[in-house]
Image 1: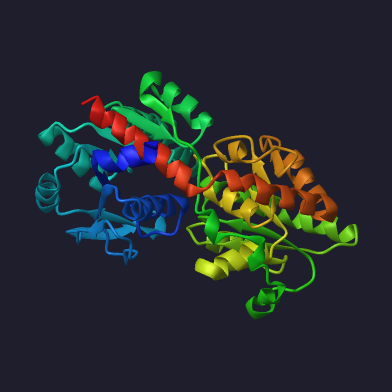
Image 2 (image 1 turned 30 degrees about the vertical axis):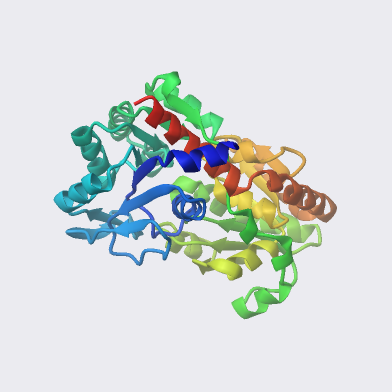
Length: 394
């Protein structure tokens, strides 16, 4: 009997609590992917959330209308929602979970923790977002950073197992004060069926007001300062000037939205930068595949799912050596992993890649092959096995 068949027959019941499921980001795509794959493979997984946003039509996701909701301070594109606690607790008791999975340390996650205490159910979670690093980037306050680290340590120390999507963040969790025996590296994966060079359509740019000529440098993600976009903004003018002096042309394509977009758009006005907002489905896949290079300056991402999507689409990638993205790149083969502590060096690499089409295209082809080993199915099986172990050790 295969491991997958054993998992199906054990009928472990997992109840997952998350504060984010309907937003446009890699975390939500991962949560939706686990729900869809669980349903497709016959696993008993249900996701509890509470949002006023439109919830994707995925099997196994149950939304509870919040008693209060408002835009997140500083993030108009994200919601802060207070769930109906008693209603959610009663529904959780009726579900009868063998394992409770807490995906986010927000109000819904706290309801999940309360239910685990009431029912004495083991708790597994995943460290999707490095909130202390975000606080550092956004506010630069040592007091607020200390409070964030204290809160994360207190929250995650209650878990039987904390999953992390990169070795870098496994180390950070240890430094945060979690016991190494409770930290488990989750196999990286994404829905590779949705991204491919086959979606390439250079005619797509005309309808978006982007010049057909020139190298398209793509960023996709939340347009916010914790993604280190101020560095890209600061140096974009000189990048463009250097490329043009070398006889080339280049445009910056920004997909996504967030609190830094207005500032970034204003500062890069007239400098070959195009802001497309949120894009989805086949249009998003076509924009990836029709670009030439993916630039991701973030130092706070626990994985960087967009980096995998870009490689699967045939793009060379440039990322930093901090956080998870560098761990899903073959440095020098599918892209370049470079320190951004010295921004000038990172910019030099970016310019070199823009000007060297042969190298970009070689990396793009290698990236497509490399990403074939990162299918979501294998990642989900690894994910599910952790919950099986938590149930057996109960």
